[in-house]
Image (tube, rainbow, N blue to C red; front, side, top):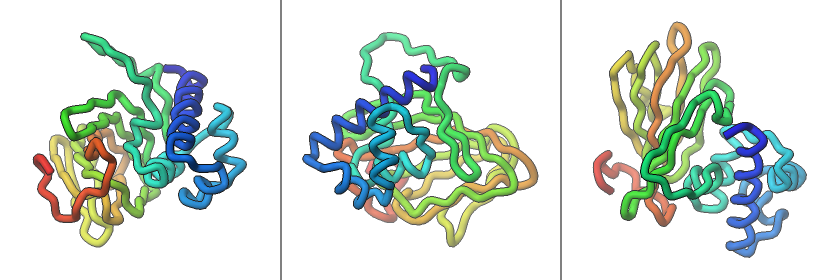
Length: 197
């Protein structure tokens, strides 16, 4: 999906989700802590959202990130070429959403994740759990008060509701991020195991 198409998908999904909840732009701006003008640009398809913006909208609308970023299509085979994907960039992380999967009562979102050295990506928390596998480099990741350092092939899972961070250690990192949300997008209880909730 090229950037223009991705912007149109976000615009349509954002407008539909906001209207479904009966929220004005002003109310969504208040709930998400995003300027009303920025929301208006996003809904018109002219905005350039960051990771933080998309996660703030996800939290404010109480939906998985993929509800904002993906078109629903039924296919037997799904082939996604990374060159055609829109990149969501934050302070230290670049994300490309590869796939959303709805599995019974759980939604999974699969991302190609690149972490740039020299900065730290921080999140105040959001619904669900995060699963990360490092494919190259060394990554400090996990709960903000006690992150783990992962090397190639290492995996960690943690509750995303608590503040957490991503930070490259000694150079760039490539990794796979799998976000797991309840289909209802309700909050995941802290301390829930990384298997089925």
